[in-house]
Structure formats: C-alpha cells, structure tokens
Amino acid sequence: MRPHHADQLLSYALRLPEAAQADALQLLDASREVVNAILTALWPALDVFAEAHPGPAWKRVDALLPSPAPHGSRQWRCEAEVAGRILRAQAARKHVFALVLPLLTADFLRPATQTHKAGKHRSAIAQAVSGLKAGLDEDPASFVELQNVVEQCCNYFLREDRFPRSYEDLQPLPLLQVGLLTYAGDDGGVKGQAHRFHVDLTAGMAQFRFRCPDAQGAWAWRETEMALPPLLRARLAQGEAQAPTLREVHDADGGRYAVLDIPVAVESAPLIAWEQVERVLGVDWGVHTLLTTTALDADGNQVGRPFFLDTGGFDGRQARTRRQIDQLKRRSERLEAELLTLPEASTKAAWMATRLLHLRRELARCWQKYARRNRALAHLASNVLLVLAQVQRCLQLAVESLTTLKTMGRGKSTRSRWRHYRNNTQLRGEIWRLLRYKCRLAGLRFHTVAPRDTSHTCPRCGHSAQTYRTPDQRDEADPWGRWLYCANCGYSADRDYAASVNIARLGVAYLVTQQTSSPGKVLSLSHLKPASYTRAGSALRLPPTGPRPARHLRGTICYYPGWLGSAFLQSSQLKSVFPRLCPVHLSA
Image 1: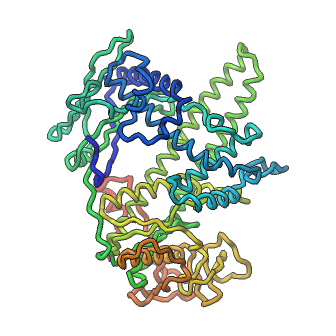
Image 2: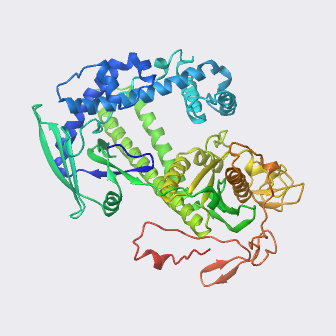
Image 3: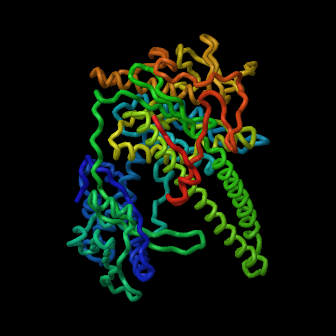
C-alpha cells in the first residue's frame, strides 16, 4: 500500500538474526547478479527511462527485457524495481548533463603551480551555474545538481585532459557493489510470493519469511523472527509498515551482514495556518559556531535572546580523526605504489599486501567513527532547534539555504582548512534533512532563505557592513571575522547573531506576504523593516562593561554579565544519569 501524500515515511533498520544471515546473503548475491545484468543490458537504452512513465519502475524494465534468471515472477519484479530506480535516477542526471554541456570551459579549472596541484575554479563554476539556473525556472534541476555534474565533468578533465563528450563517457556503468533488494514489486506482506512480513505489536516481535536459494541453487522459503525496538513499535502503532528492503552492509573488518529496512508511513501533523503564525525562528549556519538562532515576532521585534550552538570540542575530535584519515590515505597510497614495483612472489610483497589490508581496515573504521559522530550531532542539533521553537512559541522556522553555501579557496592555515572542510561537509545537509522532516511531523512551517549577504548586512539600517576579527580592532576588515560593525549607524554585534536576525527578518517578510495573500514577492534586506532588540523585552540584564567583561565565579561555574551564556548538552547517557550530570532547564 502506497503512503498518502500527507504521511511522512520513516525508515528503521533491523539486523537479521545470525541464523538467517547466510540465507539472506545468498539471496542478495543472487539478486545482485540479476540487477547488474539488467543494468548492463539496458544501459544503452537509458534515454527510454527519461520519458514520463508513472507507476512502478519494474513495469518499464519488464516491457524491455525478460528475466535473465528463473527466480520467480515476483522475485523478478523486485529485482527489476531496483534496476529501474537506478536507471531512472541516471536518466535524470543525464538530462542535467545535457544542460551543463554547453557551459564546460577551461575557465572552470585552476592550472597547476609549484605549490598546488591543478584543481577546480569553484567561484567560476558557481557563477556559471547561477546564470544557467536563472534561465531554467521551469526545469526541475536544482542548483546543487547542476553544480555537482559540472564538478564531475571537471574531475573527468583532470584525469583525461579533456571534457566528456557524452554522459556515457562521464558516468561508468553503475553496477551494484553490495546486495540490495526491495520488495516493493511483491504482492504485500500477507500475500507476497517473494516475502511475508508480519508484526505482532503485543509481543513486540516481527516475523519475516523470504524465498532464497541454497548452495545448490534450489529456492525455498526461510523464516526468522526479530525483536522490535521500542521506538519502532511506537511508530508501527501510529502508522503502517510499507514494503521492506533487504540490503547488505560491510563492516570495517571485511565482514558483511544483512539488514532489513522497514519503512513506516506515519501521519504528519497538519500544518499551522498562516494566520496563526506570530513568531519566526531564524537559523544561521555560523562560521565560528555550528548554528545561531534568533526569534522575531510578526512586527520585527526580537523575542528572547539568541542561542549559539558551539561545537568546539566536537570539532576538535573530528579534526583529529580527519587528520588520521589523511595520514592513512597517504600511507596506503605509498604502499600501493611500492607494491606495484615488486614481484608477486617476493616475501616483501606479501608483507606489504598484509600491511595494506590492515591500513584499509583502519581507514574504514575511522570513516565509520567520523560518520557516526556527524549523524549523532545532526540529530542533536535538529532536536535543539525544535526545542527552541517550542520554548519561544515559533511556528515557522526560517533556515539559511544550503544551495550556494560553499566555502571557496584552499585555506592558508590548519584552522582555515578545517573550517573550509567543515563548511562543505555533509553535516549541514544532514541537519537540514532531519530538521525538514521533523518539522513536518510536528506541523511546523519550514522555509528556506537564500543567504544574500546576510552575514554582511546591518539588521538595523540595512546597509552593507564589514566584519572584523575583534570588536575593538577595526583597522583591517576580515571577510571571515566573527564581529560585524556598521559604519553607517554604528551597529556592532556578533556576525552569526546578525545573520540569524537577518534570516529571521526575511522569514517575517515571507510570513507577511503569505498572510496578505501576495505570495511570490521577493524582498531584499535593505527594504525590510529593521529589527528591534529592546521593544519586546529582550534588553540586557546587565550591560557589559567592555568587549570582554569580567567574569564572576560561583563554585565551578563562570557567569558573565549580559546575555552571554552557554549550555552543555550530552545525549549519550541514560535518562536516569543525564539529569544529574546536566541539570539544564529551558524556559520561555
């Protein structure tokens, strides 16, 4: 059963019991061979999948190709569904390649110098893609998709010393490297001919039956039971389970296991009517902090104090892990280059091959640790934003768009290189994705705002402002400085805080256009009403005496006068331990 358009689809992964792992992996190996055979046969006919064809993807594949292996009609549909989805995605990307092909030029590349290798000219790429996107209002391709394809073409040029002439030159055949099988082409969890999936919420168990081959290739039914986690039980009680997906996972030690992804369609909360929205929470992706938020009401008055989510300690651990990854990469590359020069029968070659295997496993473990940390922080940051919206009674979130938020340049120091990598990493995209679907579950309005110099515009007068390293040293402007000063009106504040105010102002302007039935009107920051800090009761408790006010010690906690403050959030402890470690109370 397909989910309703008002439902939100959530997916949960369950690892199959050890008794069913061998059978599930044999099934994934057999289905991967069929999927790769379909991709190889239909890759020359990729343009057929670009045509509009509503309905399941397996129907288009079944009309073009018979089953290359006698696994059963429903098993064939499931395998064809996997291949059809891949071909549809590649056909859409081929359409994007046709759009950017006339733009490809040598100006997108930086020549090699004595100190740096040849690379991509990102600012020229962004400018060209922006001009192309401006003339494609009716095209579904996004800025990020266009930019990614252009950068892929530039990487092809750096390897082959020429741009690709066709999409087939650019993109190799996308064969599956790990097993993946969706049961969306079957007849459901009760009447399915390839699988049966039944949930017993009272007992908290799930029964999974699936057809799989044995060592001799004979197909038969296998059955296993899995315990449901409490969160998944709660979701299944609220919503409805959809067709599961069986996939293969490789661990860092070279082993592999099978997991079952269970999608659950849960009902989303109805969106708040525009007439009921009175406050907007502006969210800025900070330069020196991960997130900065400020709440404004519909009249442009600031409500409450700003909130800074500082991840300094987390960034330090991630930076050390990243440096270890870079070191392992360099050592692996040196070993690979030296191993090619040795005869295969030599003792040193065997030792180096074993050493290279250990380095690759250690590298995989570092990447897994890096990804787990980013995922945990993304969930924590999105939850913090939802708590702030609830505390400050904000029914709309205005979040800075990630479309053009990309740091250019290589960075001249260790700190700047890490800052560039952190700004361009997938962490922000993960937070944006999680926040978007969580807002939909909560019924909150989610609106993206284009940056448009929000970090270099005065929120009081709307004029362009410079940023500096410190508030008391304004001899030389620094584009990455953390303090903003407006020479026109004398406004002085943290740049991330000023950017969050400007984003909230744009969100308020969008709110007003929706409430006045005039959508589509785009306003610039210079034409917006200035934000007031003191009119809504957000004045400083104690005005700071200088740029670095004296601190007061009370036990082991330091207090600063003014609204400066911080909170340490820890989510890995048990609920019974966490309140004693971090007795933090949020109030409006």
